[in-house]
Length: 84
Image (cartoon, rainbow, N blue to C red; front, side, top):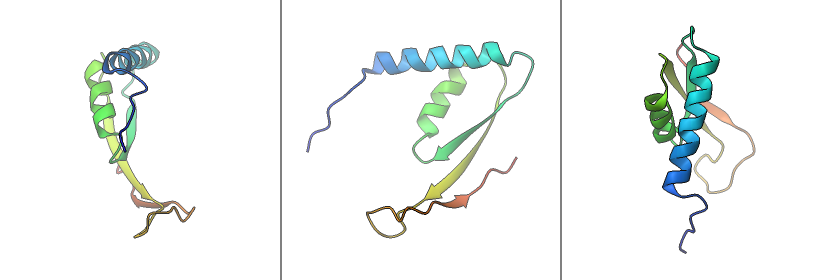
């Protein structure tokens, strides 16, 4: 099965820049804590942080609902919580 791209790399980069600019403008005198969900968010979060013009803190959570199977159980389990 071949995946079809819905957004170009340029579209995604522009959206990340826009969000980074908005967050930087909204919190100019604060150090926000950005929380990503492992493992899927780490590249996006890294791109976002690089595009921001303010200091931020980063932390991650890990969650699962599939256990050992391929179908979600419907119950989300937090396997790593934030440390801040």
